[in-house]
Amino acid sequence: NASLGKNAEDSGHYIGASVRWDPLADNEKYKDLLVEEFSSLTVENEMKMEAVQPEPGSYSFQKADDIVETAEQNGMKVRGHPLVWGEALPDWVHEKVVDEQSAKAVLKDHVQAMAGHYSGRVQEWDVVNEAWNDDGSYRETIWFEYIGPEYIPLAFEWAREADPEAKLYYNDYGNEMKNEKTDAMFEALSRWKNDGVPIDGIGMQTHIDAADPRFSREKMQENFKRWEAAGFETAVTEMDVKLQNLDAPREERLQAQADIYADVTSVCMEETSCSGLTVWGVGDAESWVTGQESESGEPLLFDSSWEMKPAYDRMKRTF
Ligand code: XIL
Image (cartoon, rainbow, N blue to C red):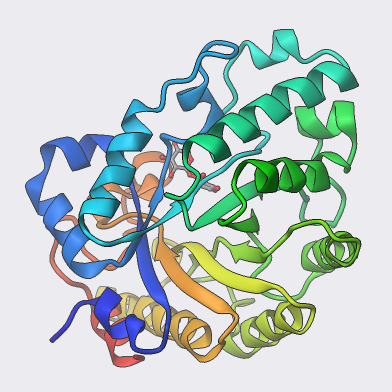
């Protein structure tokens, strides 16, 4: 009865989890499950700009380094996340970034310091995170405000200069299936890629609400195939499935959640373009959903006592 990671390896994919520094340092059960079950990890918060560059030009890599070391000691891959995002910015950015020139200088320094520091140790980087709104317009982040859409291809070029090996990803939510947002992304990213911008892959976060009727395995697969046909890799990067809005008895809700996990996993395992699937946390106890949105979201593969849920078993049966 091999682990999720071992099972997926047979078809050339990884199964990962996002990881936080605190439970890794003080919860053995958490660490054991992580290294036993998963073959990849994403640093959940400790690589965000507010965490690594708390003061201009002064980097603090220690916590992220600790997590990367855990991966290396256990033969796991690492997804770096994220180099460029409109959120989790340190306060000083709003003072230093005042025009196009200062925006480019700050962004380039950050991207290259990070990608350079982790060069050879991160297999996939989320270079740009969440650049589009649901209606297909660009999100008005500080980077967009001063640089315009060009901040996106520039970030990929700067990242490639600092790390020639890592696969460079664009990552977003709500892009698991075709819709206005995905269409806008597809148009721009494939145009840049054709022009030679080093964009290797597309990350679909896959934060799903089990009550959302729009989820469809077929539509998801269609969408993965569209990216593959345009020369991109794909990955499921932050999967979780919230339960609280589903109006059904508990057992049924857990089964519905398990079905969605199985659907998404089987899409990724069937597509050669899909490098792997990452879930956004190890167990319900430390999920961001539990912390921020709903205690009854219970979105992950292990429950709050670190026991396997139906979703875990169903996922395993898809390999
Ligand atoms: C979330 C973390 O899980 C939380 O712990 C943190 O407080 C906020 O960020 N999309 C992303 C992730 O790309 O970085 C976010 O992670 C979840 C949504």
